[in-house]
Image: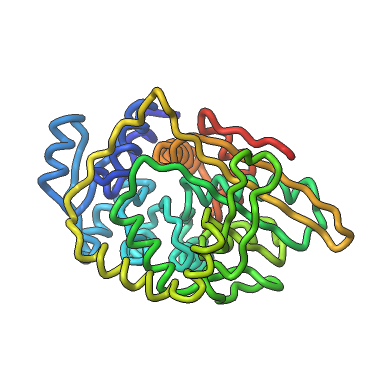
Length: 351
């Protein structure tokens, strides 16, 4: 990749938990992005540490934001919660003709990003939400399963992500999703159901016998759009008892968590190094079947969730800089079903 390309992009939210990991990965791979965000003091610290150009920007200042984006080819949004930051950044990108990436896992804003397809085509830019763990990873896994069973009419995703901590933005995103209720894809359409409306055990290959419960994840929209399988459910680890409680009070729990997270400190989180003696491993399973009873399954394994997200985000940015067709796409549509395996330590195994 040419040096000009390596510097002609912006990382917004560079001083957040995931933003710092993305920045570290970008620097390791020879990139020199413009660093941006709301906090001028945090940006000045990053400038002192890296020598990179910085630009304090508020998403509410549309004129200044559009002016800044007009000087770069792409922006990688690493500042959440994305239902608050995504719409403003995408609107500015469309006006400034600047391509857009994020690492969002929230369903509603992910779907909203894909709805900008025609506007993105007209602007000549690419918009790719969810270019980090776990949307991109789960979608790649689902695409592999769908390839093995082209006539599949149902798909189930089980995600057991291992994270070294949790960011405030991620907590806000999860709480917002819970407050909005459960979701799945039924007969080709997104529908609202009770959170944890169904539970299941992980397929063969899980030595711990984890139970999963349905959750409102962006993976639902991504996998349905790229595989066209008409019935999709996605879930996270949850015991049978906890799932029953969530079905009854999930929305209330979400509202309480949202209130608590909103009141918590907005102090920038410093990423913590992973304990090399006990490396965290994240796993996802995909199962699919057809009307004849044929069944296929596969498992994806990778590292700690935030590190995997950072590695995927930088590789997605590199592919976007090389040139994508204009429009709004899921990670698999934009980068192919093998995209997740570009992240070191990521494997997909058929079961």
